[in-house]
Image 1 (cartoon, rainbow, N blue to C red):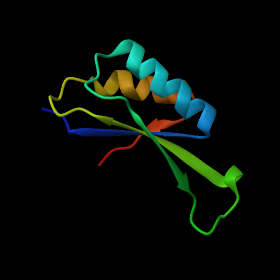
Image 2: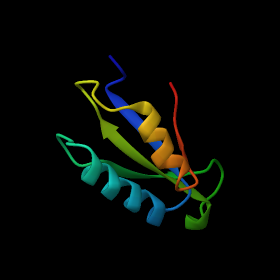
Image 3: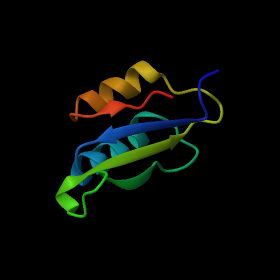
Image 4: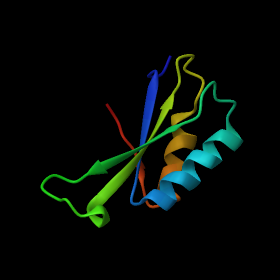
Length: 81
């Protein structure tokens, strides 16, 4: 079984919103992915922030390879524990 939560890191809000929409369209998710702004250490400017897409996967059904491919297709990555 995989982790109960997957975190995809994206370079900006637009990419994060697009990934969240694609996740909802591709996978039968029990709940919508969460978007979280992650300011880089020491930076207050909104331009210097990454966006996280947090996906709950309590059943362990999501394929990490597909999640990673989706993130990298939007210049991001899948965070590994």
